[in-house]
Image 1 (cartoon, rainbow, N blue to C red):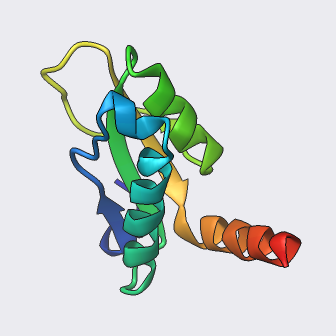
Image 2: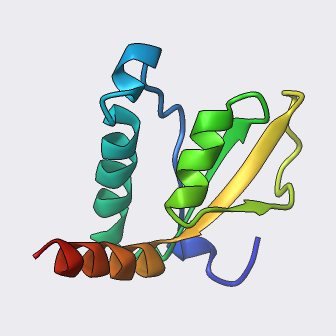
Length: 101
C-alpha cells in the first residue's frame, strides 16, 4: 500500500437483502459506513465486491469508488477491489444537501 496506510480503512461484508435494496437500504448503509469513517483520521476507504454483484458495484461507483489493482491475493475468483476518497465523498454530500435546500 501507499504512504497513507494509517489513513486507509476497509469495509467488510456490507449486504442488504434483495427486497431491502429497492427501498434504498444499501445506499443508506454505505452512507452510514462512510460517514462513520470520516470522524477518525481516514481519508480513503477500500472494499471488495464480486463481478457478479452488479448493483453493489454500481452503487459504490455512484458514491465515487473506483476499481483498484489488487493489493492482496484473494482466494475468491471474480473479486473486484475498489477505493473511494472520503473527503471527496463528503464534499459531494454537502453539495447534494445544498441542492435539496
